[in-house]
Length: 416
Image (tube, rainbow, N blue to C red; front, side, top):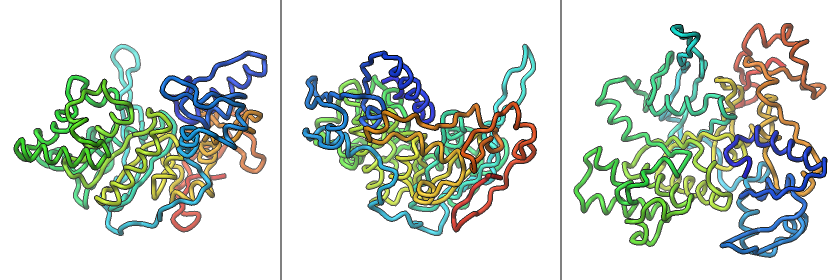
């Protein structure tokens, strides 16, 4: 699993590197939980379940004519970019639940022994998330996504800008923050470190209820039982007193989701909730979150580096790059008609289960060939411009492109 903890852009670069090694006649055993990624490199594939090979054949036959039900499940769990969605992406409400208004965040960076200088991690980001809506924030590692999540949760204060929840500015007042955090919860990326390994499932889910002084022991047991049923950890009695080491990664993440539900929040920040889960559980978790949204009317800010899962789960997508939003629109418009070169690069990096992918190198543009203001990329010739020659005279170097509406509800910041 050499790419499981990496964002899709870096993953594609690593896969290109492995393909080059393969051309040099180096043999490989490639271990992965992502069957689409395996099709990018492998000639033969063995599908393993419960310690045995359930299917073993060349990659073409496994992808086109899978025989075992587990292989079929792995293939069906791959999020497809171009398929028609099974649900409507129309706006759920006209009412805004969370508004980030021109948010900028600076962090101090040491320069020498005594001097520090501010580093701008997020610059002039505005988001308007409606009630009952899932808003995806997409970008590679270091783009500022998690910083925005921390601002939305008020774990850090923005250097500039305001956070409004239900049209009310959230201040640093302790009582206001305490009530605010009851209504806005988080689902974390790593189910192995985000829940306490010394607490059982009952204690993990009970903790928010204890902090907010909700109910007695009987009431809490009823609330916890309902939360476990909501996340499909049944029979409940089989899970209540288990410890995290007794659960799979998908089950641990369901416990984390149950913990976020017990306070009956109106808004949930899901920070890459499926990036560390195996592919067979990934689609189950996303479907679970969508069902919870439908039944409970919860709004989501979905943070991810994978634009394919963003399209499957979200109503709207904002693409973030170097701390700025470079493109924003409905999930269908962003994926079907990407306007910014960086968005197109993210889409190009998504692996799909196609055996022909073994014979092509992915044209992924890394951070090194972009300028933070926009991109050094000629969309007409489809070539990357040499930074050393062209960067000084490129107009993106002189000014940041204005964020403008190119089509209805489709915004982009690009001068090309």
